Image 1 (cartoon, helix red, strand yellow):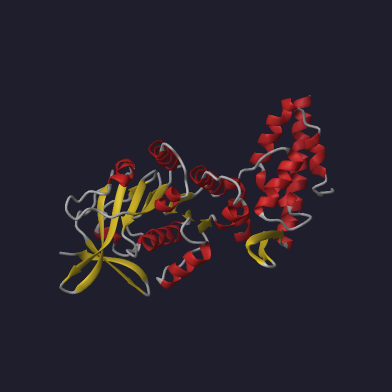
Image 2 (cartoon, helix red, strand yellow):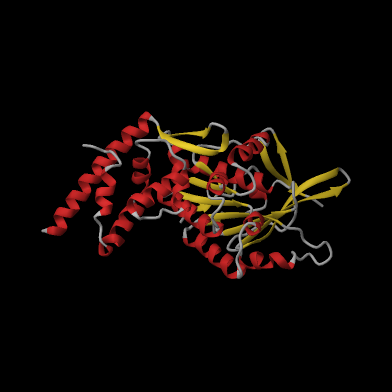
Length: 123
Length: 233
């Protein structure tokens, strides 16, 4: 399965106002997956991640929910953090090999779960 | 029901005769340099290590690294279940945005609680720093709601607050009376000059739903961390 972030806009751009509240809820409840998904292609700081998810999905994940996830994922060895060259205040995060493996697995499982839910509600 | 053991630091059972119940909001007050941060951090580190629970220490005054350096210099070790959150990255990256740090702190707590169901202890270092960078018209209502949030989460919370009592009236400054009124407990730390020189002390001024000593007890620090000794007179 392609776990690229390019899959996310397809899901989000097609949403209509009536389903926005559900998309909003799904992304907020599963924010750890969406944060890791954002990091699959490039390293980013917390600010970039929030902006990226907002621009792709029109969902604002607040700072108070994103930074704790970044810190705990770093503690768990899923993310690697380093300060940008020439700027010791901006911390960029990237997936460790273990984090990448977990992110790809989570995205795959998450997509399957969504398919299953979609099947159930359409019956 | 979860509670905090009265042996969370060496000698705590000298002043606290029963465990602190969950949902308690406790102020740790005193002048600068009286070991407020060290006491809260030490109690949390020991408690989570002994009980395999999780704790969250939010620092607004320092970043995580400098806080940890200070704690290491006091002989206090942080276990893997004690999480430190600082606002350095968030404040730098969002420097052009107005951040409501009280709301943010509630979200940070919720986020850790989502991740670690057995998060039982929380500390904020310090309330003074939170006030100094928060702009609210009705701080009393805001702080009431913040305390309620901590109780609703079932946490035992230590809120560090630099605050002196008047040596004449024994009252805290009017500016901080709301917090003392709303809190379930107040632990005061200070220094006292006697025949043997200057000694640090700890005194429980208030602790709802618990039995505790009223006297000032000596607080000591050595390579093994913080300990509470006998009463000071």
